[in-house]
Amino acid sequence: MEMFLLCQKHSILHLTYPSYLYDPCLDGPCTNCTSVLGTGNYTCHCPAGYTGQNCTEDIDECLENPCVGHKSFCVNTVNGYTCHCPIGLGGTDCQDNVTTCLDRECQNEGMCVDVPDIGRRCHCPPGFEGENCEEDINDCALEPCKNGAICKDLVNGYKCFCVPGFQGYHCDLDINECTAPCQNGATCLDLVAMYLCQCVPGFQGTDCEVNIDECNSAPCLNHGSCIDGGVNQYRCQCWTGTMNILFRLLNVMMSYWHIGVKGHFSLLITFFFTAGYEGDNCEVDIDECQLAPCVNGGQCFQRSDVLQYGQLPELSTAPFSYDQAAGYICHCQPGFTGKSQQRRYCNVLWIYSAYVSEWWKKNRKIEIKYNF
Image 1 (cartoon, rainbow, N blue to C red):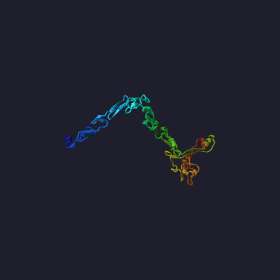
Image 2: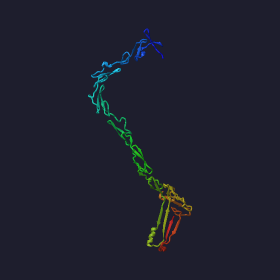
Image 3: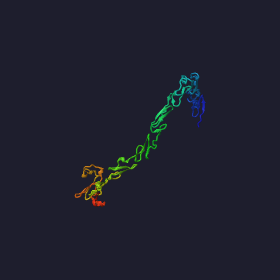
Image 4: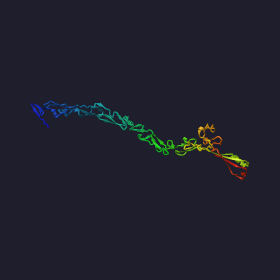
């Protein structure tokens, strides 16, 4: 640790090792100090507001009475002063006339207060602002209403007018439209101001309230009849042809029978069995020629073949019709004949019945002719 000694020689102050001239400012009498080296003389340069050898004394600016006006008084501060003015005066030195509550009242039920040194001040009620409480605070400025709602400013408040589909004070709640509107097991999707029903198969409509008639789409082909089978179901009743039973001469025979006229009568019963279409939608054309109904080398043509219309003599003029589409046509080889239209094998079978009664045994014979 180094030691320094202050020595005086011929009125000059010295510092021992290392040997320097003494600076009195080293003792720090003030912040801004100047001195004469080797002497004890120094000078402190004081900042504003302070005085004295070492700048320790505060200058009292109120000594000069800067505040004007009756009842005003001065308060000394560091490097300055503050004037406290009486009611009606203001400014730095109370040199200004200020407005008082006697001069003007506050608006919108604001409370007026005379503040010393400042003047009149209005304490505004909630919802108002401004020097005289003349401005209505816009409570909609912060956009409190959500989801596109319209905000109406009120006094110290606001009101939100919601768009369809929302509710709540701030219109922030989505209304659930899916309060069981969908029927028949449908799933409801909640949307904004609306809902969407996802129907199960077999139903349609806004609320899935309509049972779809599956027959409306005409699913049955080839003149088939559609029968709606309930929910999401249908059944096709295919055109399977015709079975015609023609009782020829029956009425004539019965008339002759009752009047007792003798003679020989023939009762012709003709069965026409014809095929048509099959499949879930009657889409399969039954091949009537598959069983080779035309014998003795006869050629079979299906009546459902639209390409034959206008080509075969039997189908030369009539347009295609489902009433005529079932069955087949036989074209026989030379030397053979027979009505081929819807007649299987073109064969004729005669069956003679027994005598029905003694009178009929002597005078009548019923001849029944079956054509297959």
